Image (cartoon, rainbow, N blue to C red; front, side):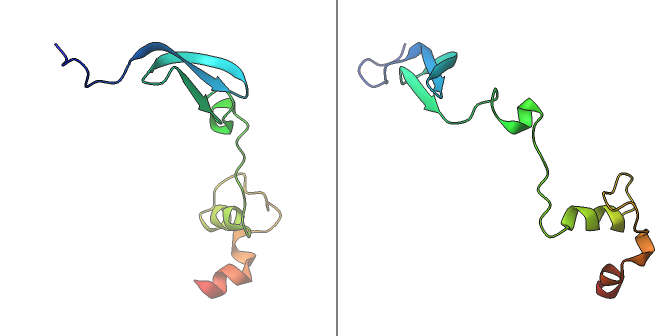
Length: 87
C-alpha cells in the first residue's frame, strides 16, 4: 500500500494536446499535457523527413564510398580533384 499524502495525484486519462486538439490520452500526474511535436506530426514518423545536405557532405560521402543513387551521377568517382587532394 502506498503511504498516504506523499504521492502526487494520478490522472489515468490525462489529455495530450498538440496545436489545440487532443491527440491522445495517457496516465500522468498532470491532467493535461501540452506538446509541440508528437508522432502524428513529426517528419520522421510521417515520412516527410529530408536529409539536409550541408556543403555537399552527403554527395561527397556517396561518391567516396561508391554508393548507388548519388545525386551527382554525371561525375565519375575518380574525377573529384578536391576529394583526391584531401585523401
